[in-house]
Length: 193
Image (cartoon, rainbow, N blue to C red; front, side):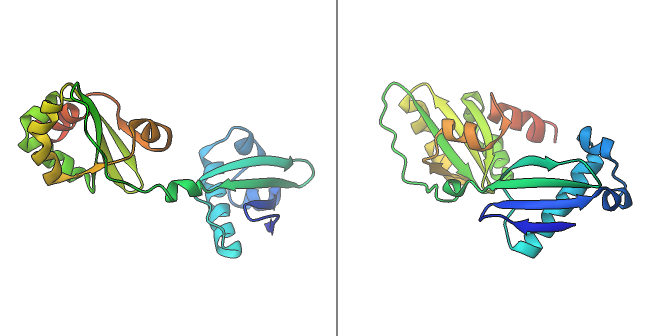
């Protein structure tokens, strides 16, 4: 296997079909996008990280440069989403008397389980659950500001207010539970216990 850095985020990778066969991968596995191919590709990414000191986390665009002859040549473009690392939380404001949408950040899923266990009213609020940058986010749609006021202490006991919008989380985070998240967390983790 040969690896050549083309730019800061571009790498050319070539591997012979004989090397792939030794790893248990045939040309058909590549064409079928099989599990075997994914495992070998992950190993190749690890080698790229070690040899070229390139972080391969993020989206990778794969261009098949050549599949003819006796080797496979790929050009990988790695998009690191650097701007997501620069996303910082700023204090969120809540001044809509006719309702509001708020996001709360939780360090661990256990904090959310504790919240839905201890505060029954929170289960009735429309919510979505996301996972982003090693934390969980609950996005709530409160009907009235007073609805939030009644639950503020419990929410701040288990988590903290976040300035990340639900739109940003929908775009870049992992959606765990799209609707009625607090009710479903209660049903899955508390009610069954």
